[in-house]
Length: 239
Image 1 (spheres, rainbow, N blue to C red):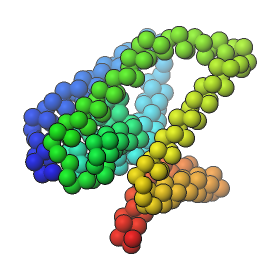
Image 2 (cartoon, rainbow, N blue to C red; image 1 turned 60 degrees about the vertical axis):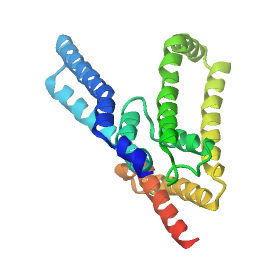
Image 3 (cartoon, rainbow, N blue to C red; image 1 turned 135 degrees about the vertical axis):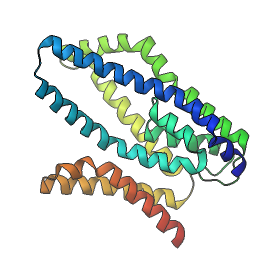
């Protein structure tokens, strides 16, 4: 395991991963400049613009906390730089950890954290994580415009099959993802962690609404992830 991690944590991999990350950051800076220029053209007060930027920054940081946790979870198995790249460019906390774990289990390993992972398996995981992410931009470029028109048409007509289908598809994807993560590993630890995380989110949201603590509601997901990870550690040491 140390052999491939020395490559995964090397300066060369860092520079390769840094290129697309810098491009994404540059694109974000460009859009900010274009947005600020447009606000001046529209005559929007500078104080209002600053308030919007501040609120947007805060609301963006909070949902990013689960991604930081996922980054920490992926680093021991995939090195420092590949998870950084994948979670910075079209990445999501749920997708990246699930994709890496399913790739390793498909190759015959127990999953993330398996100490017998070889360099060839690591390369396969990286290819799967990176190539699979291309599907979303391609599908958007090909089909999103048509889908968006159909969805707007359904909304204007006051309902119809499209709205029901979109909701059903979303719930179906979440259900399949949840049950795959829950039962794919074939051990009770995954089931216990799943249940604890699920109950923690519900409990934190309930307390936040009851006591009207907005910040607790915003932190409910990352806190539930931390509780789930802590449960996994405790459960592994007890059983």
